[in-house]
Image (tube, protein in one colour):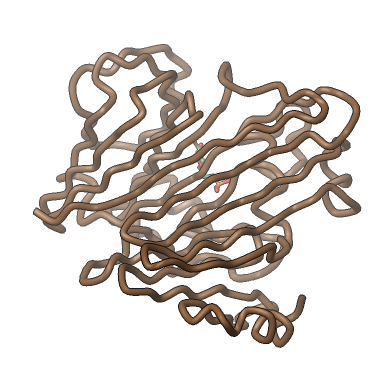
Length: 298
Ligand code: BG6
């Protein structure tokens, strides 16, 4: 559907409007009594979630590409069906095909509590360039007091397939050096930078580049941000991995789509199933992973 068709079909949903941006990207803009937010149809990329009276919970880079074929930097990129570099072929796009795809607008609805948008991606010419399997992906985004994200994978083919997946959430924070993250005490993790296996002691704090995969953490984690006088709570379900990432100084400078001085204002805490928690999905079977994100003012 093009912009006008979307506007006509969904004009009865008063908390949604559509706008067109760089490279023909369509944004779904939501504004209701509890929050506002925006989702880019390209990549099914949630770019913003701002509870009423607060600052955005999500972070977007001012240097992000806004061009199809490149991922957006910030918000919630969807990593699927692989995470990071492709395990066999590094020429394939990092983090999989979903964040570079043109998704379909499937449905929208609203209640007094929230506005719900559902986007869909089905296997076809685009996906088969990168991955041979038949699938349907449904992404349900609910914007209200909380942001609820649910990614559902269905195997529509006749053979098993394996997926890794992540809701690669970039949180907007005051200063990486002054925040802490609770919820991981005692949890085993792989330090991707040193390739070592470690166990978290106490809360997580940051003073250097950080890239870690936590295995089987408790479902809830909290970012404590005294600089913004708030806590951000992330409640995961059907997710057995959590990725923690901040590129710090040198890596920020190497990334063309990330400002050299932006790293203190962001932290990725990703709801995921990766590495040893990757999944096998049988023909006809469905798997859903979700995150519920909310904030408390302090
Ligand atoms: C994180 C990874 O999830 O994503 C990092 O753990 C990676 O290793 C980061 O650098 C950003 O990836 P990309 O492909 O969006 O630059």
